Length: 367
Image (cartoon, rainbow, N blue to C red; front, top):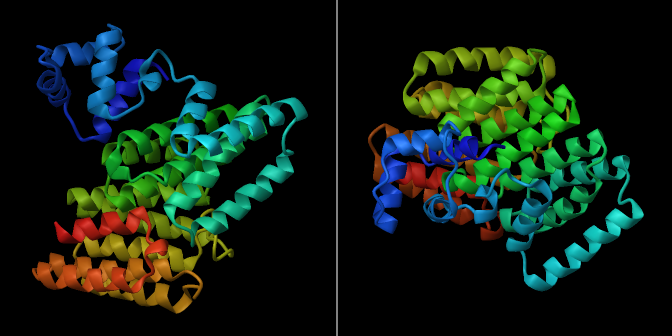
């Protein structure tokens, strides 16, 4: 990715204007930067020098290596994985990465089996555990990226890794979603390209974070292919949530109808994978969407439908539904009661089952 596009994405992820980014740098470093200069960076008319790269790294909270020229996939993946885990573990993973390069690494079939297992594990494990494990897989797969099919594997792993950072953190989550989308393009597989972008869009839209990026990735997915698929379904609902949060009821409801039509053709039979959208999960999407729109009756219907089919081994998603009810109470004017209801639901779920998304929903209810 060109540095101008990266700066723009990271700025938008934080919800800043170009002037606000300039002010943040000026406040932190005593410079006299103006909006026009930031615009020139983003349009690649001017490349930031070493000093301003350090400034951007600090105010956008992104590793300096990610701003030095284009994002170098091998260096960046290794640095990011190493930063997420203890040095001794990182040493072991780097050793495994070189071994994978020398010996060929897992086969494509073995990687697909790993992805399937992670898709199931994601539904019940905490973010920290998933992040630690997936960072190790990224170190391995980066040594095998001579095969387009393994670019598909890498892009899906990156998408899962991005989910372990809260969307409100902006720079980290969006950076990984963006790199996952570019990696998916290297796979030359439209199904992967749509799924990666759609999964990123629904993650950001559901969390209510980086809405501009959610819209952008959703629009890209929808432009790549109109064929009904789970990726397209995710993209549509990611865009619907972004519209609901902005107060655009008409667009949100239109997208909800479009999403239900796509689901009728592409919904999943699998029940317990992050790569699946069965009927109960569609209703989790709709429950929050309708709660955000103030459609209490519709939200309750979606919640009841989700509960009727929700697998008992996934208690975290039952907590999602309870938080949606807390949001409905808060939006109806009982903020204290809504927050208390949601907090009781969070307290009933073992802490190790808490996800970043649940915590962000809790903050939405409280504020």
